[in-house]
Length: 400
Ligand SMILES: Cc1cc2nc3c(=O)[nH]c(=O)nc-3n(C[C@H](O)[C@H](O)[C@H](O)COP(=O)(O)OP(=O)(O)OC[C@H]3O[C@@H](n4cnc5c(N)ncnc54)[C@H](O)[C@@H]3O)c2cc1C
Ligand code: HEM
Image: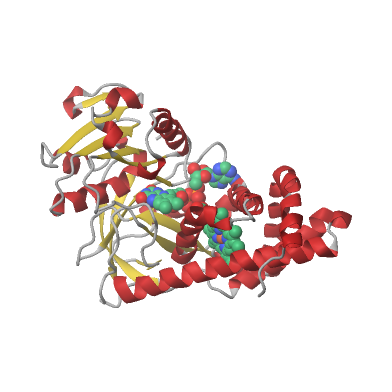
């Protein structure tokens, strides 16, 4: 495929204002079109994210950012990596880019109507192909590395739920072992797997991501899942509640190889601040576990905010992290709990950070509101963007 010419680049750039105003209308049309023509794809797209409009917004933002940076898309490399990790964890294949491309181009034509000249459509065809080629290449590399270096696999591999352990009123850990009794994958602490369940009511598979909540080991993969309550008048969490209620020890689920670019930088000597809210604690447990098991001398500040002691998971485990390397603080939104060594939350970041925070690596994970608040506070404190690592679970409400 030839690269884009100057005129095509200018045409794509000229669509930026249209995309800014109508991006979500375009991507909504696109999803409806694609999932009508290719209903099998409903098995890989999170249907609740569809209903929430989350996918439509994510794709619209990505298309807009791409058009805005069409002169030099390499500035989006970080975003491309993040999306590619999500894609590979879902087993997205190169040939599926043709399906997406076909429906995206048709949607541009249908939504823009007369404003869509042939030149504009040709320009977007070239632009889409360029982006698709980039994703296909990055994802091929991720699949390859997973298989050649990390005992990974492509697609879904059946795992048995060997053990379930309740960690709080809402969070339960699932210990997963491969049904084929083969080797477990290597992964970086902080990474996630996708799992999928077959949902009888809709006749669809539904995938979800779960962070691995332990350092890599030779026994099992462990995930720790919060049962998501019903929000407003919507049904309670489809996958998490099924896992809690219907998937007993011995049940089999499909699991992807681990991916994700939120993980502990084990080359750093800096102090580490692990900042988590609610179930966002899971990757922090894996990172703490890995640091504790390693030779690393890094000072670790483990700061966790929960709604109350009832939903505070892994407390017995974090209480036992060795001092002085680990300092652990808990904050409960419903007030202090001295018997748990917990302080009243929510907190302002500046008041809880260690004195050497300017030099630290930050890892942040929690519900939407938690992330928005503390990422903003970190930036206001002038922390270098390169040292802020974050993972958005994108689920539940704004509170932890
Ligand atoms: C990288 C990553 C790592 C993750 N790690 C973990 C982890 O370690 N542990 C963990 O528990 N979770 C984790 N998650 C979140 C997890 O993937 C799921 O999103 C979560 O379990 C909810 O899935 P569900 O099927 O139970 O809920 P869903 O059915 O997806 O519903 C989620 C919420 O949306 C509400 N809802 C339903 N329909 C609508 C609608 N139309 N409009 C508005 N709201 C609606 C529901 O009531 C519910 O509260 C992670 C996510 C990502 C992306
Ligand atoms: C150039 C083309 C594409 C772009 C720009 C794109 C963009 C995105 C973005 C921005 C996300 C959200 C990432 C996140 O949650 O962090 C995403 C997720 C996803 N993409 Fe793509 N994507 C492309 C191609 C594809 C293809 C070919 C498929 C397969 C048919 C696909 C399937 C998915 C799925 C299933 C998700 C997860 C959705 C969810 O969990 O809600 N994408 N993509």
